[in-house]
Length: 392
Image 1 (cartoon, rainbow, N blue to C red):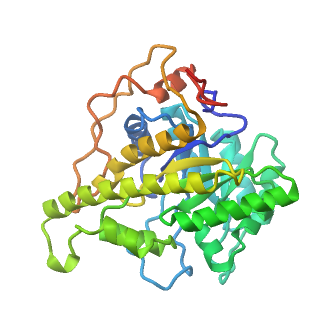
Image 2 (image 1 turned 180 degrees about the vertical axis):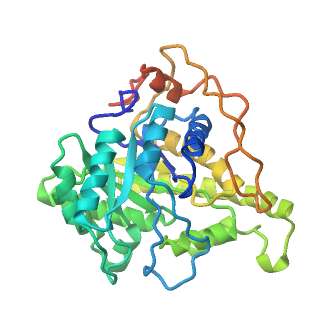
């Protein structure tokens, strides 16, 4: 766990994260603050190390397939990350696409991100496609500019599907490490085999070079609807046919024009199946890459606004965390050493719309046993497990 209540001078280790998308562009400051408070309440019970804040891009040119969900620009992830850090007491890792209008604009953004918003960890993302020229710094230029700031560190993105296609993603990881990357966050994992091959090849490369592998944070996202699955695949995620078929076995077809309540009921069943499969995939990855030397973390995000899928993130996180910690420690515990402050008072989110979207339905009571965010916000962190969390 990070042992500082707000901004860590070095935003690592990345062990257990949750992902957050900023509100839509044009959202008022008051509404953004309310959104951050709701996020904090929903994730209050989770033993997270920090929050990953995404920089949502249109990704035009990456594929000619139509986008299943429309692209909607969002507010700046750095500014929203400041609100999340204040609400949760956790440091944020801010995704940043390097496609700024100019190098000067990128430097200006860095000044605000570090100085005004207090962030020290970035995850740099290059262009969605090499076929289209983007303004501003290249990924290497951006890495160099971040590297001149002693308080800041950065990581990168790794995509197992590229390793399946070209067999060189482990070399891409090493290239970014040579630029100064301190960690890597994966694209959503639905194909354990692709991830296993990448991690083992990266581990072998590090052994051959005599270097210590950087941590790879594996991202998982629950899915319970056909439209969400289409979007996951549109993002470039490899989903084996048998995995997709098992998840969506009971999902109705759009052509059948099912009632919303029937779609939601089927989605709840599908997402439960998905959670079980993703936890099993993490177990397979851990077992098959144990000798690679590559340290792992987990990140959970929702790629849709559907209530059932967003609600499943908490269940998925708990299960993945248990799987990861049980692998690294025979016995471990998370317990309190100080009283917990009350959860922030925020209004209950609006009801879901007719499609079942808008997932931010807040619990009226917070579980009293594991509210680690509360202790972090109070400045008193806890029992750490294994090199970071103390054994019982």
